[in-house]
Length: 120
Image 1 (cartoon, rainbow, N blue to C red):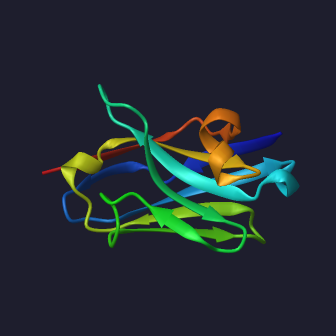
Image 2 (cartoon, helix red, strand yellow):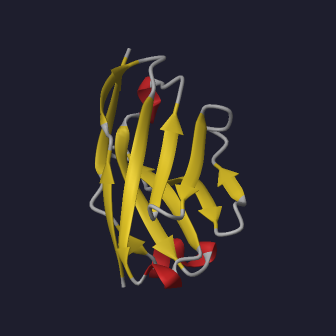
């Protein structure tokens, strides 16, 4: 089992930037894919970005060109650099890890989340 702890959330004005971190511990050898998800009040959970151990990335259309996902293998930490933030990016952000990207939602390990609030 992988344990995940997110950090880096906060309040920022529109156009600002934040960098989220997700520290992994435990059985990280079973982690091939990691990703960021978010859920805004009243909305369904939304996939934001994923990265696999080969460095292949995928992004939601709503964040392409603004967010960058990366992973530091030595530090066992996942990052999400968020630039040009918009009020609609306001949500609780969660990181997840699984053997395969397709397993993230149903079979992945999840962190507790970190809140991001963007004001206009």
